[in-house]
Amino acid sequence: MKIAIFSDCYLDLTGGIHSSINAQKQALENDGHEVYIFSTGYPRSKNQLKKLSHQNIFQVPSCRIFFYKLTPVSRRPKVIEKWLINTHPEIKNFDIYYIHYEAGCSIAGLRLAKKYNIPSVQVMHGREDEGESNIIPFGLRTFVAFFLNLFHSWYIPHNIKIKRDNYLANTKAKAKMWTLMVNHANYADLVLTPSKHFRQKLLHYGVTKEIKVFPNGYPDNKFPKNPTLKTLKPNEELKIIWHSRVSAEKRMMPFLHALKNVKGNYRLDVYGGGGDHFRARRFAKHHHLNIKFHGNVPFEKLCSAIEKAHLDVLISYNFDTFGMTLIEAEAFGVPVFFCDKNMAEIVPENSYILSKNKTPEAITNALNALLENPEKIEQMSKIMLKHRDEVLISNRIKALEQIFSDIIKK
Image 1 (cartoon, one colour):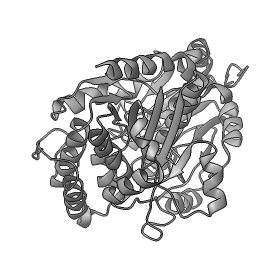
Image 2 (tube, helix red, strand yellow):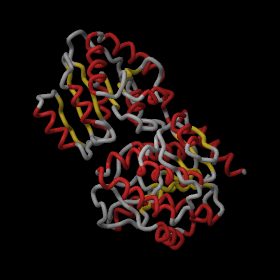
Image 3 (cartoon, rainbow, N blue to C red):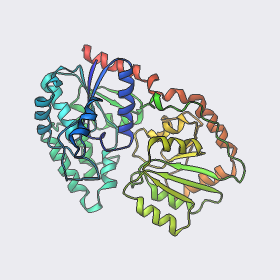
Image 4 (cartoon, rainbow, N blue to C red):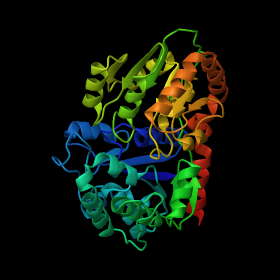
C-alpha cells in the first residue's frame, strides 16, 4: 500500500502523537508499504528539507513567526492543498490517507481525500476540550474555542452542534471544542481511537462514522532487550520517574503538592519541559523536595532513566486517552502510578497503583502505602515483564494493515 500520513503534531514536537506515528511508519515500512508524512514544522533550510525528503517526510507550508518555539502552526488548509497538488502530484495516487490531529495540515488531508476519492482514516488522539481549557488562560478560553471552531467550520461542515451539558462539555469553550472534534471525525471515512473509553466518549457526542480501537505500540528497534526485575527494599530510596510534559494538563503541580507530605525516602527525576517547568522548579526548591529536573533529553538517555526507576507516574486526570508513557514503562518492566481509572485499560491488571482520587492527599496516601509495602514493586514489575511483548508495534501493526485493506476494498 502507498500511505500518506497528515499531521500537525509531528515535526518539531515530542509526545504521544509523534511517538505513535514514528512507530507505525517504521512497522508499515518493514512490512513493505510505502509511507509518506506531511507535517507542519518550523522554518528549515533547503538542506534540512532535503534530508527529511530522503525519509519521505515533507514539511507543508507553515507560519514562520506565529507561535514560533511553542508549537508549529500551518498555513491555511487551502494553501497547503495547493502546495501539495503543485509540488507533490503523486498526492492523487495514494491508496489511503491516514490523518492525525485536527488542525490545518490535517484538515487539508481530509479535504484532498474527498477531492480525489481516496479513503481516509482519522485518528482521534486526544481531548482537545481539556487541552484548550488547561493551556489557555481562563478569561480567553471561550474566545479561543469560538475562533478555532469558526476556523474549522470554514473548511469542514459543522452539521452537529454540541451544547453545554453536565458531562464533558460543561463549559461553552469545551462544547465548542467537542463540536470541532465530532465534525472533524465525521468528515473521514473511518475513525480510529487508541482506547475504548475515548471511543465511548466520541460516540456519546455524535460521531456517526465507524470507530475502531487501535492501541499505540512501542517501536521494535528501540525495544529493551533484557530489562531487569524491579525491586525495592525496606527504607531504600523509591526512584520515581516523570517523562510527560511539565504542564497544567499533566498536573505536575498537584503531584509536587503530594510529595510534600510523603513520609519516606524517595527521589523524583523529571524529564521533559512545558508551561509549568519553571513554576515546578521554584516550588520544589522552596519546599526542599528531592527532585531533579533534566529537561528534554535524547530518547536513549530517557530509556536509560526509565530502566533505573522503580515507579513511572502519569498524574493527568480526564485528559489522556492512552498515555504513551505507560507502555514505555511496560517495555522496561516498570510499575506505573496514575489517578485516572481509564488508564487501567492500557496496562496489565495488577501492574499499577491507582490513587483513590485525583487530589494531592490521595496521591500522598497511595505513595505512603507503597513505601510501607515495598514488596509491591517486585510483584507489579513481574506482571509488566510478563506482558511487555504485547506492546510491540510489530505485534499490533497487522490489525492496522487489515483496517486499511478493508476500507480500500469498500
